Length: 616
Image (cartoon, rainbow, N blue to C red; front, top):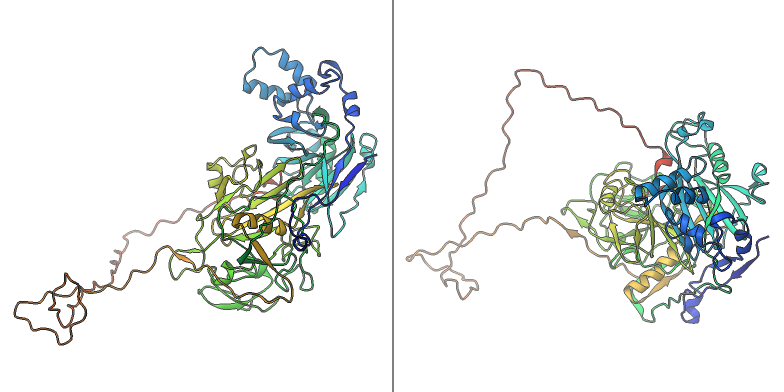
């Protein structure tokens, strides 16, 4: 049975007593790992000496799974390390391609290794793919895309406040091999969680709980794939931690100076009426889950709603004006009637105070939200809106840098607009997600699975991408997931972002609680990229020698003649250019080619490992 030491009040933040009541550290449960039980199943050439029992195994598996020896938990993978080591030893001076081919043959259950594997002091995360067409027993499943399995081993799990996690159901078919294993359907993933060697392991597959289709993987179909994956697992590596090793608590003191500008509404205090239903609000979570670097490079930046602020679509809950086209048109969302204008650059969008928008009205599953559905993270506007011209009503993209919030490893397939960044340290294990950057730019910059980044590294530009360019407002969607006993789940990153922003600006923000006086707005004005040219001013005509002096001479330059003409000469303004009418065609116009309808990508083809997408 797993024995855990619950670490309460991890000192992520040190501040005055009053501030300590605002932010708090996460509650972490630490695994008591039985490395002797793991070492006992090693035999043959991969069993090492007593002082380094996992050395040979790590050396073999490390050829394909780089860094496996840094995992603080025993690593289970669908990989036969012994068979791989045997073939590798029989190959004289193998090239990198040959090593890759040998590793592919050692994969179990027809699963394929991806470019993402991350191990460290908090455990490990890995992604594997399976093409159903390659497996005879899945020939009845019409789903045509690869199926991706996220598999993790957790040294630490987070104990969350708020709504309890689901209890799941027993899996009798797997009980003999995985005592205590349970199945969960949570936040669009089917999950299988079990304990071995005192460690929590979770396999997760994105699925939809509906009828089968060629573009939809149902959760019942995913169950069969999960069972095949679990039956393929073998011990592949890991490194026993020193006895008595504890969590390395990283201090992050809040700045002492109080900002005269930066303010924020309390966590959970979303815009009234904008929850999953009118009576539901947000999540008042003051937990700082990790020491982040704020995800936008520069201040100022503004956390607030994209859907229920100026230019927003009210998340399709209804508007007072059905069709909006003209800049400045007043309207309101039906859920609360608050006055808005059709102008993305409007002052309230680019002004303090910040506003929590986790659990706003959306149709995405979020277990921590009061209604079980809602916005999965926070929307962040950059420092100002760049308008094409004075008449434009929306912001232009690519004017602000987005940076890595943590040291970690990227998980992202080509053509995807989402970036997952995994962090694995002695004090934190989590993943954060960035959405709405242009995938073509990300591909060109090499922001792909397996890339390592440092906190503060530029990883992209703020954009408006949502399936297509100009598909949403100019902002970054940022969310956070932490490991629990059922795998990664969404948590509110609002407090973590406040703490990170305070570090960026070097000042502490002012919290505005319900009932407090809201300070007046101090909006950042928009930048006009193509301002209208100033009206032409006629140059004064030089006076003829015998021309009379003007009756009233204005102030003059030292280089100007004292004799100014009474009136400037008129400026010739060319008439508007009119295009000539085209000549009448002698033959009928050519018909336009009919474009073939493009096949829509299935929902599960999106990370392809982690495809749940937030649309705003």
